[in-house]
Image (cartoon, rainbow, N blue to C red; front, top):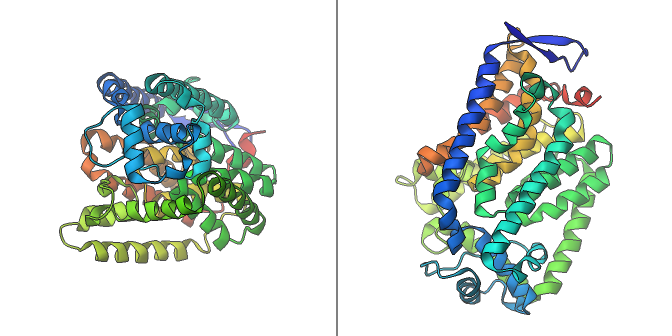
Length: 417
């Protein structure tokens, strides 16, 4: 038996093997079960002040109460974190590693107590996900043809989204900005799109690789808008905290980047699904920290060079490709940061699902890699110390997209009509 799906190229229907229906039912159900299990056992821990929301909330509190001039001072951060979010038993603070302009969003939340603010932000993130879901509906019609509820289930089933929600992270906000940027690019509004992407600079580790690729691909109008928006946000941030704290923020980023050498914040680098985490995870017992940094930089530069001539034809497709490539190219990346992959993965799964049961082997390869990337964050539940291995399917997907860049997102242009 076969399912009938829309053919994005011809408007007719295409038969798809019936086994997809079984997989579409079983995999999301299992992943959603993992989410629920995590919420049952971990909510109390995170409400006790151990979530990433701790530093966002504290930063907003410091801005609201007139302590912006101490925002990146580690002893002050620790003092305020313990005051507003409770003692966490750690000697170091959870560093406020985001630019000051973002903390303006959390200053009003800090009027509430920590727990009410946590649930309020959780609710806002859920509302934002529902908004993204409705924006993406025109590009999930093939998935909905299998089960009407499948696109919504995939939103809930993607593990990085669940991690972002329970951690009180801002990754869903970045996903929303990227979706809006993509929609603007589809309409040809490159300057507006670049300005929106600049608002995502609170995730420097993701925004910088994306814009670097657009520079390589000479999408200069988009890049000019990004620089304009970034300059405005940098001015706002420096105005809020002062020049001395702005310099302290730069030192903070370097401090975080030196985490495994014994001189920086003790982040777990092997939980990063990027080149940095992969090299560290495989070579930490063989290579010195300096060698790991050098190898990481060399491999990252090599990938950038390989991507130089890999730009898709349209700026909208280029953004989807750049989002995928930004994961391995980032220097600092944690599991919740993979939330941004939901945009390109949904589009790839929807537009290429019709390749199953056909002779289009290249499309099948990309579709199956996209499905594997969607499922691969499950590794965080079974072997979090090897989460760096998630880089393997992500990198394979990037190179698969490179090999067929003119057609990988071809169904995207027609699916909305």
